[in-house]
Amino acid sequence: MDKTRGHASPTGQSWIEFDRDDLLVRLDVTIPGDASAISPTVESVIAMVKSLECSAGKEFEIETGLREALANAIRYGCQHDPARMVQCAVACDQNRGVLIVVRDPGPGFDPASIPSPLMGENVFSHHGRGIYLLNQLMDEVTFGHGGTEIRMRKC
Image (cartoon, rainbow, N blue to C red):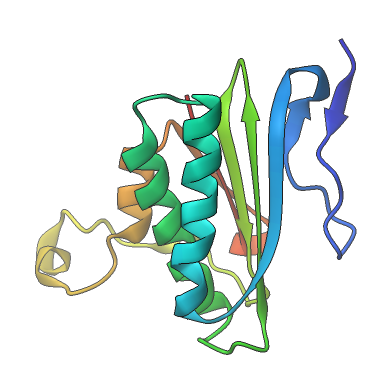
């Protein structure tokens, strides 16, 4: 089987690795750095996931994970600036489940530097649980491009 990288983004960078023969559908969107763009994007993704029965029964985890990833990209990567754009790609692979990539134009971050929300004073913090939540909800979470890209998979 021919292994193919996902199509390139406007910046020329590859999105998602997949086996093209197994790919059911792909959704590629670019949204403004505005929180009002999150719900319509998530609704489109969940409709696709449900119609294809891709990762059936895991829609809640996919929805929550995608909302969190988009919210982080808009908050930290775009600084809530609608002129800055967030890229999102979603694919459904029969063997690997739902693959999601979210990329923002921000400065990035080091995921290892994020303190655990389960330890010490962090337990009482009003923020800082997003990455922990993503790791709990999704089967696979990786960061790339200096922390400006998150790749998530849910089987």
